[in-house]
Length: 271
Picture 1 (tube, helix red, strand yellow):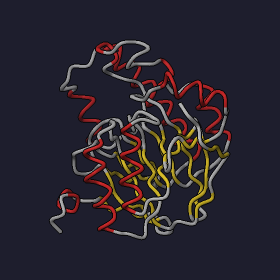
Picture 2 (cartoon, rainbow, N blue to C red):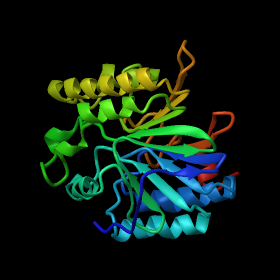
Picture 3 (spheres, rainbow, N blue to C red):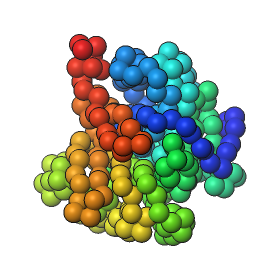
């Protein structure tokens, strides 16, 4: 994997940014989504993507992201990595540049775990990774990697940085939105019990980070459902859906900490 640039943090002036859930290397979805972003608000320059980005870094897929980002006026895509990533190439590159965000294309940056940066004066904490509940159907070292997991060391490092206004994760917290809770309870795809146990452990790890850094807003992907809940303590959790579904993307207004989902009609150019 080619690294074009690295940095230890960002201090972005943007008052509005895009939040995007899992895209799974779907270039067709990017071709629809980014022009819709341009139509909706051409002033926004930053995308915060919360994992299962899934494009081959330096290959055709990333070229598609660069192309449509340029058309949409997007200057940077900051990726909080998920579980379904090419960890075989990403992990060694991150180990060689410990704690640094790596630019791997014209606009795409892969964030280490954890990583802190500032947007419009707000502290943002990114902690990528999650467990693959479908790993029994995958091939180790090819499309499943142990490196996907959030480790105890990553958790401790995330907590050590203190409070954050915004928490970006791929994995859901244990205190999940109702839609995620229902998905896990019903288990419609019949994920194996051992996979669900590991998933629960990862969610508890994310919850401990949230309980320590007390974000006003926590955004995650991974579960392929959209949901939004504000807990009694004032913390708000938003689960973003996957590519091709409503609830995959929306605008976060940083000063007010409000979120507006991008509708499917807007993506399809019907408004």
